[in-house]
Image (tube, rainbow, N blue to C red; front, side, top):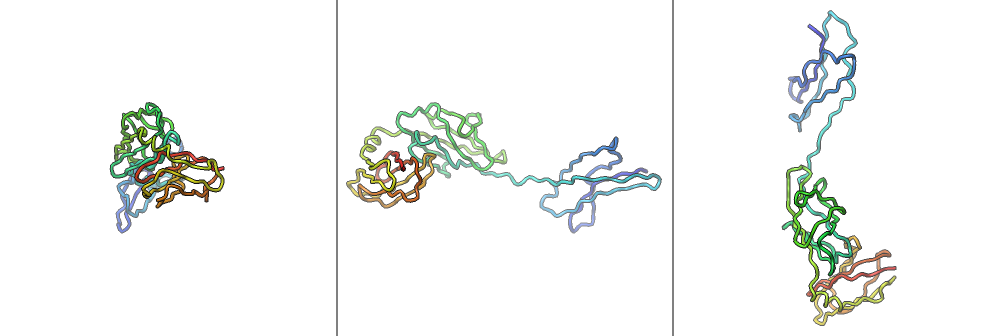
Amino acid sequence: SYDYGKVQIKVDGSTDWVDISSSYTSTGSNIWTNTYFDLSGYAGQSVQIAFYFFATPSSESSGWYIDDVIIEFDTQLSKENDFLTCSFGIPPQTGAASINEVNHTVDIEVESGTDLTALVATFTLSNGATAEVGGVAQTSGTTSNDFTNPVTYTVTAEDGTTVQDWVVTVTIPTGIDEYSLRKINIYPNPFSVKTTIEFSNSSHSNYKLSVFSTSGKKVYEMDNIKSDKFVLNRGILKTGIYIVELRGDKVFENKRIIIK
């Protein structure tokens, strides 16, 4: 017979102690021994853990020293694999990206003349998710891609197994849209208190004005615009450069305003 120690576990409500380790008879050279146990089989249960020591009467020793007992666990890994934001910056992007969470698509318009062959997207994904294009890992704000045709981003959730393809399509305004753009007029620009926006709206259709920061974040919105001229007050907008967009029967390409 010999002295030994072991680690045991008992589920609350049970009287049975179960060994989860072999018997430790020596650490060798009186040094600390690191030992690990898998407790995943007891997940969701309340348990007690015991350190059992047995000693024979024929020998004497200082006992069993135990230190640094740590129970580690992994939180449930997310299965979310969404595109939350996507931008190429303004300019060349003309407005905020349109993200369709149902069809898993991202549509972005950029200025005429933009080279689509090496655009770098700045994006955010679901927490812990990663993205690849054609097997190449994508880094927000760093990795470039050719967006001449739609690009498929394969987004993998934090759990490493839940995968979703997102198609990012970049378009350039047609010549007709550019012609319509020339009819919008903003004065004064730059301005400090207020400015007047004038555009072609002879039918008095309903338009909505959106104001975006240069990062693509919408910071102001004005709805139910039916005249062909209206005033934009600075309000809470800080000094800086913004992009305005008018949407209604037609979409006027975004125009830059400066608040000083």
